[in-house]
Image 1 (cartoon, rainbow over the protein chains, first blue to last red):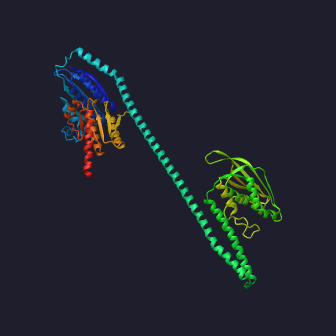
Image 2 (image 1 turned 45 degrees about the vertical axis):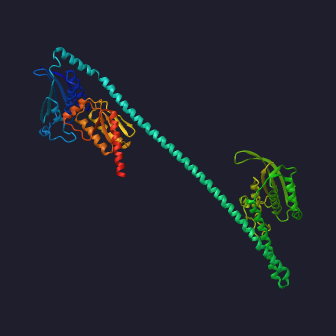
Image 3 (image 1 turned 30 degrees about the horizontal axis):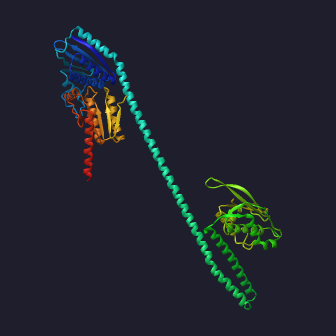
Length: 452
Length: 129
């Protein structure tokens, strides 16, 4: 008696898996040992794969034959083009080292019965495995139990489905984990980049401060150099001066008018040079001398400076108006004296011909925000004149050494150091200086010093 | 798409096959694994097949291929947990799996991988000296 237990269509790749799973189920149900179950499942897998792979589609049927000897039969059938080199395959000559072509030959070894028929209209594989007769009694009850179990197995599919979904979830999880790892990795890289940037930044900053220090050093060197040149120039100049005076006094009769003119001009030039050098030395000294500041009265200092300029004031019929009781500032008395003398002298000097200078001096209290952000009180002293004024475009230049807006032989004599000296001196006293002026409308020079 | 997860454990890759793989899934695993070996610079692959109740010639060949390919990529592959019935069937089938190292369980598989690594390293050192 032969009973058809079930059949599996082989249309999709998954059907190969299904067929071997069913084979194992059937094998277990009819009482095969675990080892035989594996053998049967493996065999079904091999042939089902061949059927699906080479014929495109087919089916496998499972039969239980009880007479003469109980056997589980599996019959594969398809409508493919057949197996062209079957004899070679069956002879085992087709088996490659890696196992390719092993399917049919291997299955034949695993099965007790194996028959294959192939032709251009399709292939049929019939194979079977004997069941130990003592295992089961193949009666009606057994077959109804068998059919029940097999249908039950089918209804368990959702569970398999769930298992599969679980697998997919696991896959998604590992993918997610990978992404997260990548993100973490990126984050680490970013932090590393940031750290390197910071490092670079620090390096740059330290380099800048290094360079600044170097520049400051070389500037100081230069200033020292200038100072020493000016100092060394003094001696030969003294010789020129002395020798020319000897010429003028002792050898005057030997010179004609032109000769006398020349010696006079030599003396004049030497005197100018002397003034220049003295000014330069003053400026140079400013850059490297220690400047001690003490509370100083602006009124007193201005009075002193005016006293020094009395001759000029009288000569030019100038008027100087000074605010009374101005605040006390923190300054160096020598430098402040020099600064105010310079500024007042300028105010008196740069007036149009025939105009009596009028100078107004006053102070106002202000606040200054220093570099570290603190606000400290300061005093701004303004000196306003009715002079020729300074064009706006020259406001910065006039504070530089040897910058003279008026030519060498102009009506306004001077060395061109005065305002540079003012600026430097005020700077050394922790103050600032500036000018507000328009050409032809007088000037207002101001200095700002810390209030006492 | 269905995939067998590949877990990274330090220098090793760990694959636990818990489903009955259809052929394409097996091929995907083969591709994924070789790619992963290169991507993560892995030196060993541990494939746990203790859940597999059957290995036919195709899956056997896939395992063998993975071993050979990983070898070319300087990684060792150890297949662990093969059920006895599966092993017997494979032999009866006439399937030899060249290049496949096996171990009884994951623990022994890891030990084997580490030993392989150590001997590899010492060979490198020997060569260097």
